[in-house]
Length: 154
Image (cartoon, rainbow, N blue to C red; front, side, top):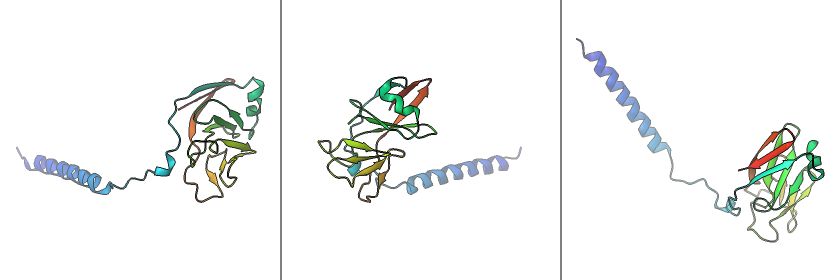
């Protein structure tokens, strides 16, 4: 019986395993990409159901008519029908410590801070607009439509 093919396969697999471990250990950096300025919002558990037949949520039947849902998340919720689906974001400014200035106000398809109108966010994507100092986007939530109900959770 020839053992040479068995040893070469075994050596090859050990080499691959060692190479993989080497790459994993030395390509991972200790540098943390977490932005410490994005920790103003609490990770509040939410589970909300919105009935689209109710008058206050009727604008969601049509694209690009965001609504504000109070008393959920950190500062309420913004819910928008994008035309291809629904999105939900926390209504608190992720770039501002929680306080009087942290609850955002809807302005068309944007939300802005009542204390600083340069803090504007898209209610379509949640991204900050026109202000490069804003590093954090709006906090998104999972949203699912079943019939005429929207279920929002995290």
